[in-house]
Amino acid sequence: MTNVRLVFTPLNVKDVSAVLTWGLGKAGVPAGVTKLVDGVGKLIETQDYGSLLEISQVISGSAASLLKAPTLVISSSSGSYEIGILATRLSPNASSANIEERDRMVAIIQARLIN
Image (tube, rainbow, N blue to C red; front, side, top):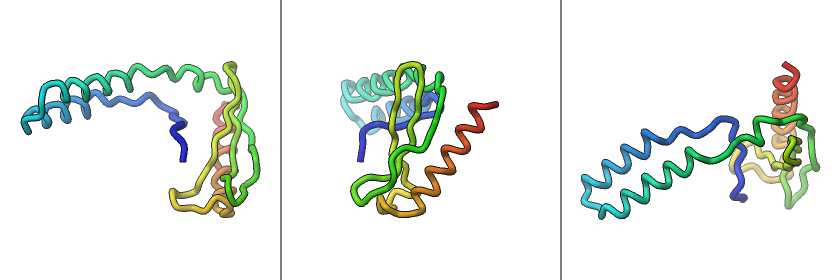
């Protein structure tokens, strides 16, 4: 597992944060907790996704192994990022389905970069 995620679009969590804050307030949760929820929502919305907007190349990365999923490599003006690809959450790393999914993603992203 990783704490890094590839996001193709900014997350809009304003409404979710508002409903959650309202619900927690109605449940009698202290105001400090509801302010925390609101603060986290604002933090998510202000994240910088700029480096992903400048993708220059996407290629297949390393092969699948017992300990590592197959990867794709994203290159941008701010550097290169290697991301493991799983077909499903429970796919074993070395599954051929992961390789097929990685190759499908690379082909789709490369086609979008050309257009």
